[in-house]
Image: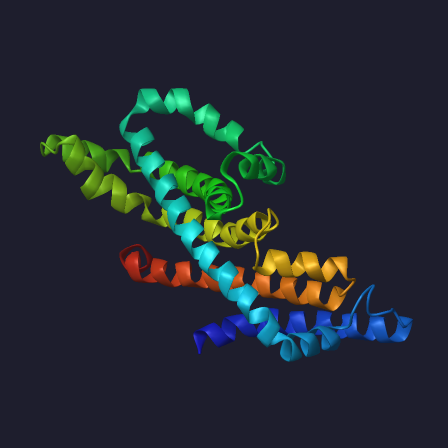
Length: 250
């Protein structure tokens, strides 16, 4: 009930925007290949779902696999940099620079280096997922209350105990913020990676639809991508509520 009470306002705004979109297309008599109406997009989604479902399942599997690998790499990097401050000073600027390289430019190079298999696609998703997790986790580690650190040091805690008993639990809220960002990025990364030459996936579906001027199918793919991102975001938020319940109650 609480979710419904919080979510009805955005739903009303969304329906209102779709209504305006529908009216503008009808009144201005805009051709379907240029700007399809929402009803036409919905009709294409329903009638062509069997054709689209194969691409959808492929993208979901690729997104989840890349997300798990990317977030694992990001978390491991964050822990290593936190435990090795000198290494963090040397590597941190390189992490920032790694995000200045456009993925759409790097993707063709990955195909040249690793071929058309799944490896370059996983690398693309990993590159877009690991950075938010790394930065969020490092921020959580740094924001550990100093008085709590002092208390544990007075109690004789080792560096390992300091990390496992204090710094790691304290970083969970920040870490989940990075995970939620990476969850949405993983779908985008999967679609971009499918443009590299995949046989199926939402990215392939969009390419075929745009080349044949089926704009309604392009919008179907766009809306599905948005829904997948919201679902992944909601799944991470649900995990956060379960695992960081102590922070919410406090």
